[in-house]
Length: 85
Image 1: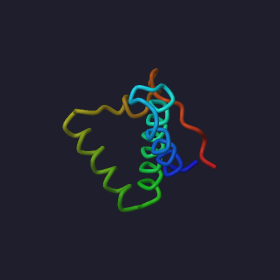
Image 2: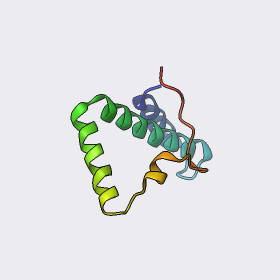
Image 3: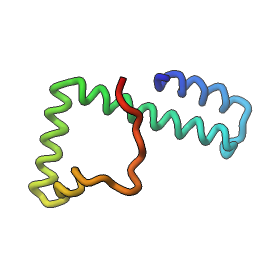
């Protein structure tokens, strides 16, 4: 599903649900995840954005704010992302 589907679901649920309704909270979380996934896919598919991301990583590595181990080792709390189609 695209992020616009999730946005429409949040809009529909927010009309008649309380802000702390569990279904609305879950829908908002799914929307945030879908938007983030879309941004990542677009960044990877766009060479200019991919080059900018690489420059940011290189700068973080140079300033020692990021380590290669952090980039390459699996994180215990990292979310599972579905395989690309």
